Amino acid sequence: MIQLVDLCKSFRGQPVLDHLHLEIETGRITVIIGRSGGGKSVLLKHMIGLVRPDAGQVLVDGLDIAHLSERRLNEVRKKFGMLFQEAALLDSMTVGENVAFPLREHTRLSGKEIRDRVEQKLAEVELENVSTKMPSELSGGMRKRVGLARALILEPDIILFDEPTTGLDPITSDAIDNLIIETQRRTGATCVVISHDLAATFKIAHKIAMLYQGKIIEEGSAEAVRASENPVLRQFIERRAEGPLSGV
Amino acid sequence: MIRVLEHIGGWFTGTLAGFGGVLLLLVSALGWMVRPPFRFRSVLKQMEFVGVQSLNVVVVTGASTGMVLALQTYYGFRMFSAESLVGATLALAITRELGPVLTALMVTGRAGSAMAAELGTMRVGEQIDALYAMAVNPVGYLVVPRIVAAVLVLPVLTVICDFTGIVGGYLVGVKMLNINSGLFVARIVDIVELSDIFNGLVKAACFGLILSLVGCYMGLYTTGGAKGVGLSTTRAVVAASLAILVSDYLLTAAMFR
Image 1 (cartoon, each protein chain N blue to C red):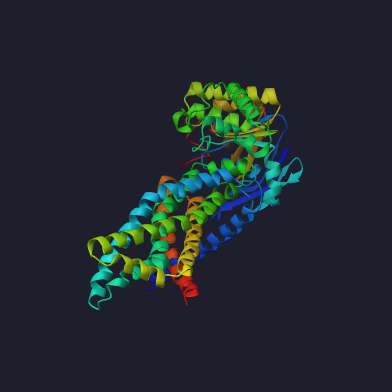
Image 2 (cartoon, rainbow over the protein chains, first blue to last red):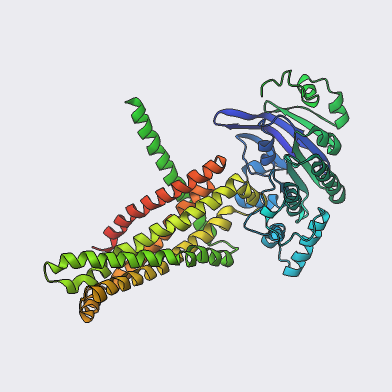
């Protein structure tokens, strides 16, 4: 389980997270929604130690990772897989090398075993015959799939998705949503998804949390969120420009 | 007036912060150098990039410098009938100073800038974050191989620059300006000592460290998208070139007393 306790983070005096509390349940898909620039990605990066909080705790299975040394933090990070917004594939490597990268770094598998595992993971994300291609030769949706294959290759307990469908067409977005659901079902992993895509959110989420002004203002199941009377949440899920979430 | 002072103060603190950042990166890189995994393949790849691919530039730089020096010193020395010293003078200048410095400046322009651009692109494309997320330290994975490669390769490139410079000088001095071939070579052998060449190579290794460290630092701390990458690349070349020139004086003062 991941617990964020009284988390605070500011950038240049501008508070982004303000005494935030959130519990991510094990083996479930939690979607964190909120406006663009509202601190969702910063929140996600705290969970894997890419950003350290100014105050508060980030507990991963009871261990506070906010103050761990780099070496111990790396041990915790091996429990995680992360899909970045633009996939963040290493562009000097082929697709196959990208997916194999965590295996080469952290296991002693033979070349053949690594190749087999890579092909298997690429097949799981419905990609075939792309191993030798460079990331620049792939479409946005394919890059995300490769990023997902790379995130899954060490069979992590926790998978973080930073806006997995942003910039994709609706059909590709739906395919990625299905992949997230299928992956979670197959692996039983804890998934945390950052999104402002409402259709995707309601489709994949076991739990939804709304981030607003540095705090989680509402959390619950999709049904509970739909029924919520919180004016900020209502404006967000009804996609209205007028309301407490004013401004562009 | 206050604005001018503010500007100067801002520049000074910025430079100081950058200097501190580079030193911290050096400390971190030294730590990762002695910690496994040792990335020999990455080092070889970088040696190929920094070294082999810089060969053309270094050969042309060395040859043209030697040729120009031969011409210039010949016309000066002829006034004192000391043409035979042309070879020794240019060999001293090239092995002690021009070889290491010009090689380092050329490699900074070619490879130091590329390091900043590559790492900067990785930073803005979240690839550096992805490395952290995959429990791989970017300093060990990206910076150490570049530093090791540059430190190993710069002396080799400098030897090539020294050699082509002296050959260029020989061709102009002996073949064009009719200096006696035997005297040209004999004076070089008499006057240039092994320590001149060796100290030049030590300097080259130091310059390799500077250009790779500054290039990697500027790349790793890039902010602001494509414009930021461009800015980091420019800053890497300017900062590394200045640092090479300043450290050249300090190293010369320490070595050639």
